[in-house]
Image 1 (spheres, rainbow, N blue to C red):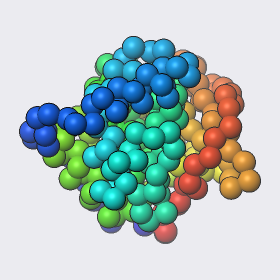
Image 2 (spheres, rainbow, N blue to C red; image 1 turned 90 degrees about the vertical axis):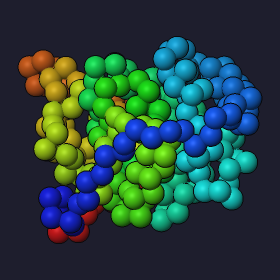
Image 3 (spheres, rainbow, N blue to C red; image 1 turned 60 degrees about the vertical axis):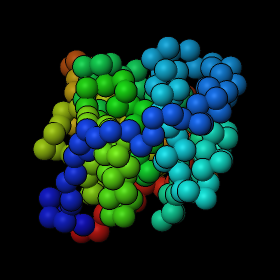
Length: 232
């Protein structure tokens, strides 16, 4: 699928939240305290974003009672919503600021984008599965996120129309980091990506210096679904 030919462009508009009172708040508070903060995530803004983001709305209804447990959950189409700690870890490592424009590859249910939306100026997120892109848009709109734009398309190509980006995050693992994504990172920018295959993956931090030179560093082992390329 060519990014400009069949891709659908969506923007999440600001609407009212789905619920005034959140019965899952105590469970979410415990998740942040016991699964995230206790394991070394210390950035107050990241902890606050995890506390404020209703993860139970980003999982299938049948899995809602499992939303705040410490593991990934399937969301259909071979995709998953990542373990809460991994989301927090990657978000902290990304070190995104309030004036940053962020590109996410792999929207999934929209949870990572929702977390980032509380931290940055705007999130541009690409999902290759049409049904996931549409449902993520609808969910983000219903929850009132106005600074997230969702697109159906091939993440390997990035989003050149809105490049360059201050930060880029991948939530699916390519065998190597696509050059198109490195090219779309601003000088001085940072990318966080799982890299590898089903036999082993590393979480890689890419730093692009002001002179355009690139440094990559592995910071730990992870396991994500493979990053799927679009069809030509």
